[in-house]
Image: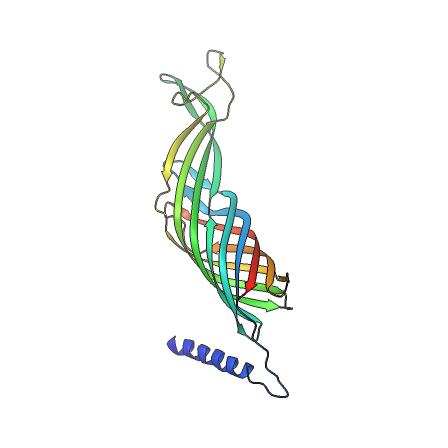
Length: 258
């Protein structure tokens, strides 16, 4: 493995040297300056697998929620002004929300039960800070594809598990039509769990890809709209069945030559 890495570095070094040697037939291409930028993105977060809460029969799937991203980056040209390498520091919202409905017995009086429809909702609010080294492949001088391993650390992960009565009223066995409420809250909603999510894997590893376009604002600035997709390799938490969180974003990046 070390020999392979040495060979790759040697090839890149030789290519860089020869690419800057000028002769009448193949004049050298002047190296473009480094660039630094800021970016912001909006999009969606999606749940992979099944998440659990502190309820034996409560399993949540297909969660999704609005998400956002912002960060800074730095990049430089690597080979013949067609491939760049760079680094990004990213703050990412990883929140998801999922729910399911069920019908279960509700105790409306002491030892008296009636079937009621409920909705269970799991709302996980989470954020992470990621480092993303990347390679950026440029085509036609304006279109690019960016590929990056993403290493992130989960900063926070809060869970709220809510149970809601869906029936406005129910017919009791004695023929009386009444409104059913939770006695603890005197309403049709109750919070069953409100704390940190269990067994979160703080270190997350995944793959990020971008497809975008560079538009020159003036000689020193570029504006780059992009589509971003992140796929996780790590489980978000062991408290679930292959529970992961992926996301997509529409990004807008502003870069300046430095």
